[in-house]
Picture 1 (cartoon, rainbow, N blue to C red):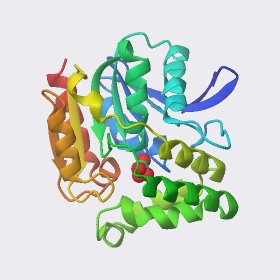
Picture 2 (cartoon, rainbow, N blue to C red; picture 1 turned 30 degrees about the horizontal axis):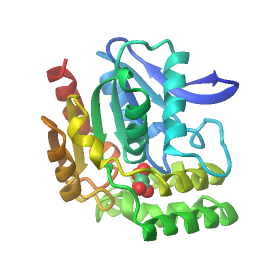
Picture 3 (cartoon, helix red, strand yellow; picture 1 turned 120 degrees about the horizontal axis):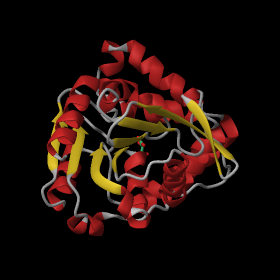
Picture 4 (cartoon, helix red, strand yellow; picture 1 turned 30 degrees about the vertical axis):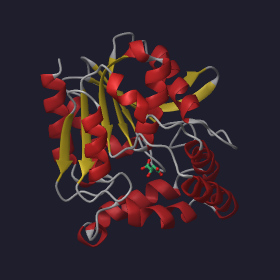
Length: 265
Ligand code: MLT
């Protein structure tokens, strides 16, 4: 893990291996360590870059609101700072996928392949957006535990926490270690993210869509419909996983990634 200064602001990033670059973008309210298993598995054949988004992990915290577009521009600046000029595979998990839509709009030439993991193209309903704004205020007032309590039951597959208490503890610890101001700012940014469904038919990229069988946030029905809108997209359902499929079933997600990276060369 290293700290990079980008425009005078500090970002944490894991940058391992050599080969075609793969950018792994974490979800909410997590950090780059959610990709540990995938970084280890891909690094022998790829340059794997896993950053902490603004407000998360070891990266700069910007209170208030951080939009998905701002995070996308951060990622482009980070790639510049790392000297990555070759088109990347952009792999976004959940909020990392939300960041992928503005990244594709503003930095299209940087992307050669797209992986959408347990994520959504649809924007928030006004009710969902209101819920996010309320949670943002509560997290700022009471701390990250509010987000951990609200999110944990939705992140893992039913019964997973009982079967794998160490994983449940790890996810909770990541959330509790996150700066409450970063969580609140990302919630406000997600609440106003644009609907990206109209972009799907014209993406013009090899794409892999991965979903946990029991994902309660981006359901398999919604994700298979999303995959059907992207011409030629590959769809993989991860048996037994909930929303956090890369952490719950790392071997299956890694295998899907490696197969896609191999076939879409
Ligand atoms: C995530 O995993 O990034 C979040 O569940 C996304 C969301 O809250 O919509």
